[in-house]
Amino acid sequence: MDRIARPGTSGAPPGPAGPGDPETAAADLAEELDPADLAQVPDLPDGDGPDEPEASTPGGADGADDSDGGIVTAGDRHPADEHPLASFAADPRMPIWIRRAVIAAAIGVVVGILVDWRLGLTAAAIVAILDTVHRSRTTAIIPAAVRVTSAQRRTRRRLLWARRSGYLTLNARAIPGTNCIIDHLIVGPAGVFAVDSERWDRRLPLRATQGGHLYHGPYTQTSRLKHAQLEAGLAGRLISESLGRKQRIRPAMVIYGPTVPWTVARISGVDVFSGRRLRKYLRAQSRARREQRLTHEEIEQILSAAETALPAR
Image (cartoon, rainbow, N blue to C red; front, side, top):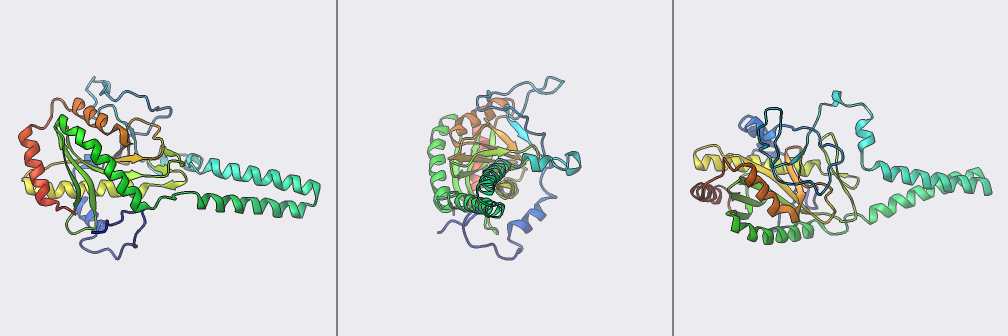
């Protein structure tokens, strides 16, 4: 079966929303999910580097352990809390626009001085247009469907090693009544995780803004983050119904290709990190939840419920 495209990837445009569509399901889900599942979290601090330790660290004035295993977070803030120009200044496209404007202006001035100011304006406009066309043709060269398939294969290979730590995986599971596909549903001592695998153009940088948004080069990935969160919420509801008790599923996104300039960041409720850190991420989650780890019996029960509730694609 052809893989159904997620938002932001190539594929046929979605049809009108209906009872089985993710948008309608999201509205039904809002009242059933635990507020903690969709809660926004603090801003991503500046200066977070790739070498930050992943082990859990004490957090808060009361000395309580950090339940997120040292994950750096980035959450949405109310627009009124930010300066009107803050989001504009934080836009990762700014360096591209500035570079384009400086080069066009420099060439325009030189041509204007040596020849004529009218030709200078024309030359500046031509340079700006050529630079725009060049960038549009050199981004996202790898087809989206190929990127997704390659990323899934790499994640599956890494998850084979995670079995040693007690983590079991269901790959490519469909959510009935929707067009959603969970790339990897991971069940283990630290809980249940719905992981999306993404492979993006390595030449474009990644950036998380203080407003809780993820950019790949100049392109926002907000729709993908929302989709990952929606998939986890819908799957959690179905598995909870099958189990007869509430089971939360934590959404995560692993990225291959570009350098990820942080260890693990929670952006709009989704844990985002490099694919090569997947096993370290799971180990850190286990350490952070050493007092609330799932037993082998509980893992088997959840996995059985997930196999029933989420059919293979």
